Length: 188
Image (cartoon, rainbow, N blue to C red; front, side, top):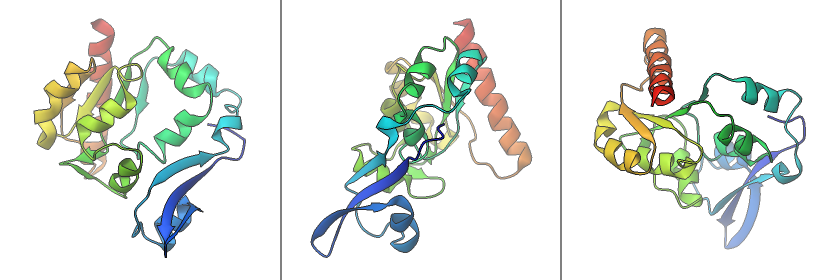
């Protein structure tokens, strides 16, 4: 996303002292055992997109958000000035795959950092976090099929499909489903 230094820090309270620590300390040393009060991509505001990033976005046929942590992974990328705007203005379908299945992160601690930014740990809430100004389509797992109407009410086309990457074939099917939704959005 950038060649500039950007670090994700987490505001926590340890032994009555509120302080910001590096995300790796929060996740590895503390194992997310303390409440994250805020997440800050330090340096992102001054960063510039790396050479070719904005051009790649502008030339894309479709943009996919992987089922990655919406705060510390995707959120940090979107915090670099110009990237969110480039995606929103690309004029191509933007489709995301939910990292939340059955109201819990598939992997990692997305629930902990989502809470820090005021977002509940649900597939629908993550779609709303990104917003209809950014997302055109959103895939949720079949166990979350009940949220499809809620997401669509926010102006984001939504489909429930299997989202567990149990093997290469399942991962390939997820990619096919995302591209099919992108085509559906394009044709609308």
